[in-house]
Amino acid sequence: YFRLMIPIFEPNLTDLEKKYLFQAYDEGWISSQGRFINEFENKFAEKFDRKYGVATTNCTSALHLSLVALGIGPGDEVILPTFTIISCINQIIRSGATPVLVDSDPVTWNMDVNLVEEKITKKTKAIMIVHIYGLPVNMDPVLDLAKKYNLTIIEDAAEMIGQTYKGN
View: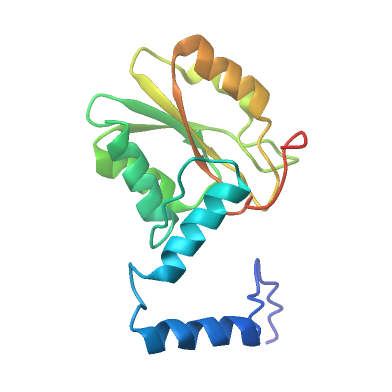
């Protein structure tokens, strides 16, 4: 039995990554602190024209912190796509809020933004956008809805870093 596996992602590690890994190890900063973390946060924020950049261990913890920082919890609803990584819905549930699922666009696999407004209720506090496989969600209608209903947008852009949406 032969099974063909096409990976979603393959790492591209070079001698430079190896050099930095051993440099961090030699300096005793391999977790949570140190100049590499600070440099990364500052350069990331600068690249994307943001005041701050905050590194987390992974996107799951970033989503958790986003929900906590926004005060989202029991009695609140968060809209998100049906096609995403499980950590998105897990963190909404962990916060005590209720996930509200929106079907995906069959072409982009991203959230079908035309179906979002019908899911908004008085309990809706945020729309969680997940950009899939480097394809941006059509953000203009989502931004309009967020403004219209005074909602926060949380973006899982892990698969979108470095990509653009309408030149930005």
